[in-house]
Length: 522
Image (cartoon, rainbow, N blue to C red):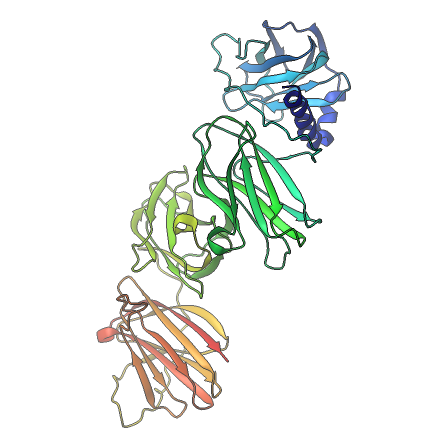
């Protein structure tokens, strides 16, 4: 028990030191001295612009456990409560929450004289604030009609070996660091609640020498979860783990192989999500190719919608590494308006006919099913009645000459341009009876990969012409990975140097929207 109490003191001093650069301003400022604050009594008072700080002295017998509580009873300004030991070191720094409450349950005091300081932040509101303050030895707040204090917090039993101070995290936060020693271990602490579900993990860049491994210890010091090489990857990850009790938990991040050094990241997230990645705004009606870099992450895209607009969203696996995408649309108030996993055919996600209840900023969440894969995906969103940005149209040109072997439909050439990049995507809209032609220069032996992705029922047909103008391939409804798919896919190896033509049109000359995806490989 003595070791546990010493550990708590060291832990609070270590955490408090992180914020020392800010707190010293408050600790040295003048404050109204209210004398001694007795245990198990309620002190009342008011903080205003003239007296924004008040302080008390607490005389604690040896080995005393107390619960500190401050409750705002009037006003709007947040109140910060700070506790200092007789050396001037800060032990507690906590600010009232949205309900006006701040509490530290079962705080161990070694004994002696302590200084308790309350201060109000009047930046947002100049209105005076009233408060009730107590230092209880009963394990619960003694404030009348106040919220019940948090359950007692049990701190981990420390090991007798000296340890570096733990770094403090909160759920929803990540930490990026560098291990400079092959056998280095980094300790983190966070406050967890009984029955709360979290996801936590550790990963390192490909060029890092760190082999991630992570361990979770309960408030009693026992190891309750650990991970290394999750699903055969270099990442350490535990998904949707239920915490058994309320208290201070400890994460141990280590280099499992103990042979290298380098960068690493540790993160804790709520529920199934390890970490959110802010991607910024997604342009309307324009395909976006992005990558979920690590397991457990969720990409967050922002879009603007007007009240009453109906939105459609598609997310498709796109890349060499297979990914099973999920998509979620979240409204301005945080409510989920739509969620899908495999509604887009195969493992692709698709949402449609979701009406925006109000005007504002919405979020599109993209993640992998069970957060068990990482890779590249393609995102497209569209308001059903919003006019897309038109594709540039060049004057009509003479169609590419055809050979005598195959007759092809005569269609007006309305969109003809050249592909100049080795890899890319282009969103195209063609009218009824129209087609798009893209010309690409290939050298003998180069491989051209083409995928035509139709939207909202558009059934595309792809024709490929040689540099001499002969039709060498027509692709329609080829399927993909043993699944039915009306989208054409083609792999072509050039057997001569020259300019090849890709012509895309709709079945029965119908118009519609589609994306042309291509890549050229040596």
